[in-house]
Image (cartoon, rainbow, N blue to C red; front, side, top):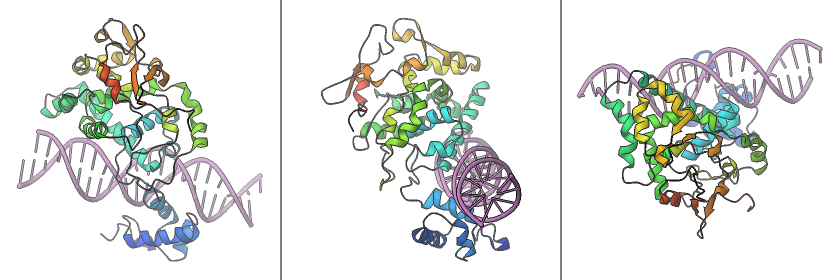
Length: 326
DNA sequence: AAGGATGGCAACCGCTCTGCA
DNA sequence: TTGCAGAGCGGTTGCCATCCT
């Protein structure tokens, strides 16, 4: 393909390796600026705008090109989108190695998925595909204490300690991504943003990230920020025994939003209603760390939300780095 | 095996912002 | 103060690969 816009001396379409090289040389020599001079100097038949975009989205160092968004990154995007709206560039600054375009694409995919699932749930087809969407979560996670990753226990892992459970989560994520529980999670998120996030912005900037991420595919490891994002636990629904019931009820779209507001927590043993909301953002201190530094079971106050959770669920939770330890 | 649906991604477009003369 | 050019941002489009029927 010779590009689809060779008219008037301006090339459009996919970039060739030679063009990339020219662009890289320009940046090496002059830095990431004076984009329009690239064309005016006859180096490339691309607009300055196009050159800049290419650099920002593909050629810039430390980009995580070709890596899917990790669960942690997804969580960050969801939270920040709820707070900032569609400020993709701003959100991208919280995600080392990700560009605004990445975030934007991720979000629009997510929205499309949500729209489609919602539409599907209004007129539930009885196709096998639909059933698979609803059931895949259970199928792929059978025999695992940690259920679907979209709903798994929150993790505060570093890249080095991310092992089997994480990879299981990742692979499971892709297979579960289209299920109804995912939809619930997506819709519920805005309610889950803690006001604490309002200070988040400036804190992050001050703390900064490690820019020298030479292995962009490694799970990104912010020095502070992610641990300071309020620990959303929108995934907790998976622990509820009535998850299947949720799945079933989703077939009745009118019940969906009721479920978001409150969940009948009979499965928790006390029959009370549990609101999905800020109270889920208990400070991490609600967990008790064990001798290995892992987070132990949450302090089991009577009637706490965690009552009835399998105790080993918390074995998989890494402790967040202490904000005091730097 | 073929065709449609879907997801992921790269790139373009139009608008706004910013710095400068 | 104004106009211009460059840079940045968000929305949109189109292509391609994969999955599903």
